[in-house]
Length: 255
Image 1: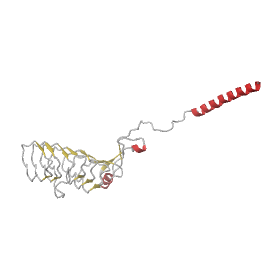
Image 2 (image 1 turned 180 degrees about the vertical axis):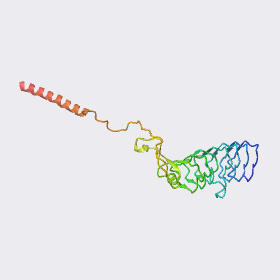
Image 3 (image 1 turned 45 degrees about the horizontal axis):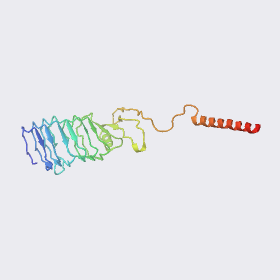
Image 4 (image 1 turned 90 degrees about the vertical axis):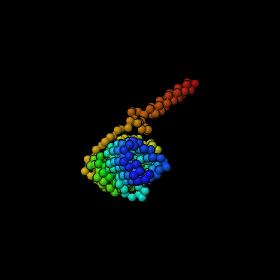
């Protein structure tokens, strides 16, 4: 889809990109001010300002096929700049990267990075001044500089201890909350704490967001509550056997 393909087409309210389209070039939908619904199909590259000024666009789903924000994989202008109502961006499971400036300059408030993503490129969330919560798990192993350039002071990264995201937050003085890792069922470990647990980042007070005790009874021996029943049973058997033996002895003696 070429440059300026539908630029200024204010009568368009929705668009479905066919799977045959792999590139959306710059300003393709710029100032389509009544565009409310977009389905991106199997797009692989989206150039900067492709949806610039689409002021009625409120949500969009980024397909797993996306490989970059322009055909040359260089730093481009923000894809959704000027989309003042775009508060929800969903990243499809299967996506492997978050390209340069993909979510930049949007009013999103929170977002979750899919488990399939391994790399977050430079300035992916630049000027997201409303973004306060982002969840990044162990799957992300590379985070380039200035991902959150000019971020909200309350931006908090939800991540695992010692993960790439955790180290990135510390290095860049961004608040973070450590998540409790899933229980290893193979080892039959009881889940003692569920929820999330916050740790101290530079200047951040350490608090517990949520702690719940697991009510599951662990396997193992029951606690002792008095004389062991096995001992009582053995004593009883010995006593009965002694009485029987004594009775037989007396009977034989009388003979």
